[in-house]
Length: 87
Image: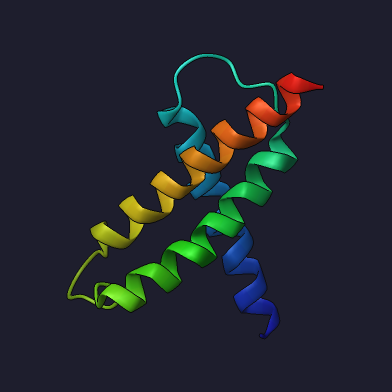
């Protein structure tokens, strides 16, 4: 992976993490760095799932891939928030 791929993964992770966090109602007790990390992981896993389903490369905007990534980020934010609440 080249530097531009790493930078794009971070930027997409920020966007996906923030959108995933906005989908979750209420206040989350996780920081912005955790949100970005969850977003990056969700973007990578969501891309793999979209590729497996055959919806990763479509004409125009890949809305289904974005929805999968945002959904995974929301699940990740909820899981991390609950894990931090138990401590």
